[in-house]
Structure formats: C-alpha cells, structure tokens
Length: 159
Image (tube, rainbow, N blue to C red; front, side, top):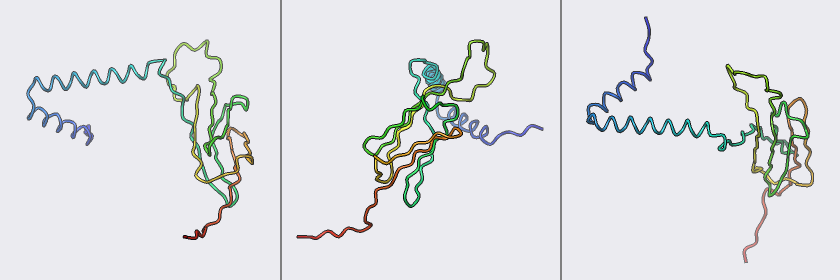
C-alpha cells in the first residue's frame, strides 16, 4: 500500500482552499504566473552569460596567537590560486579545471563544481598584514595570520 507524503496532503489542502475562495479565472491567472516565473528561473540558470563564480567553503578559527582560515581546494594548483588581503579582508580566487572533456558525449550525473571560485572574508579580529603564511597541502589551503595583541581594557580619561 502506498503512503502519501504529509507535504502532498498540505498541497492538496492549499489547492482546495484556493479553489473554494477564488474563481476559475483567478486560478488560471495564478497558474500562468507561476509557470512564467518557473520558466524565467530556468532561463536564468541556463544563461551562460550570467554564470557566477562558485563560493569557496572555509573554516575560520583562532588559537591564542593566530587566526587561521582553511579552505578545501583539492585539484587546484598553487599557480591557479590568488590569495590577497586588503583592509582586513582576505580574498581567495582560483579555477577548478575538470581536465580534458573533449570526448564526453553525455553526463549522467554532474555534481562537482568546475570553473572559477572566489571567497572574501572580513577577518573577525585585527591581524598583522605583514606576517601571513599560506600553505597548500593535500588539497587544503591554510592561511595563518598573527593576531594583533590588544589590551582588553583601555582606560579613557574624561576631561
């Protein structure tokens, strides 16, 4: 015996409520508008000129002395990475190449992201911009910053 999904039941209830309160002409207008919206969304996703770079996933954490940013960049060569810092914001850019795809006739599943990626991160603590270490090892980019030591409490004299 097939079981119906609770979400299917809710959709059915919504359709019944809509039918009860709206006339057939109003329902037809809503359906046409929804179809046009879905068609526009599909067109946006398929538009080659609107391709945005992928966003790189990162981990950001601190130790007593350092602020560390780690990003999984498997398949990216050192020369294909652009790592920079300006105004306490770290930027990482690069390109993931799928390799030679000339002989591919058809994809059955394509879940891996290939192409340009970027990520800009406003660093959560002040760092020394002249003391940065970036290491790419085993597909993981690790960028370490020395934190700027600040007094926890600074007394301000009122005049």
